[in-house]
Length: 107
Image 1 (cartoon, rainbow, N blue to C red):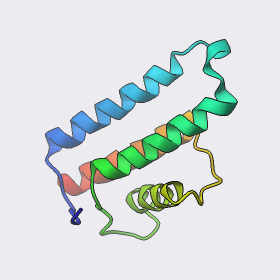
Image 2 (cartoon, rainbow, N blue to C red):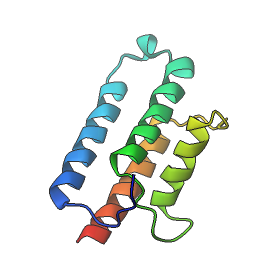
Image 3 (cartoon, rainbow, N blue to C red):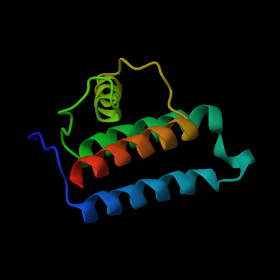
């Protein structure tokens, strides 16, 4: 997918809401049915990959920024090289920083 630096504000807002809803859906599961040690990292690693693919390659920016972090995490997850399980809290923080950066760039 070609690189893009900006996105329509409505698209960014809709995506932010969609991912927030996915986090809420996980967070409302009863503790005893979540199987946190098995399910949580699988679910949130998949959300990192989905987040990366929602926006193509918006990585024209600082090497250490949230857009590049999502891109790098997604690449390692997709190549089965990741041994870093992502938790609900980590994904929430990462996706917030990711969307904040997209909104900053898109005005």
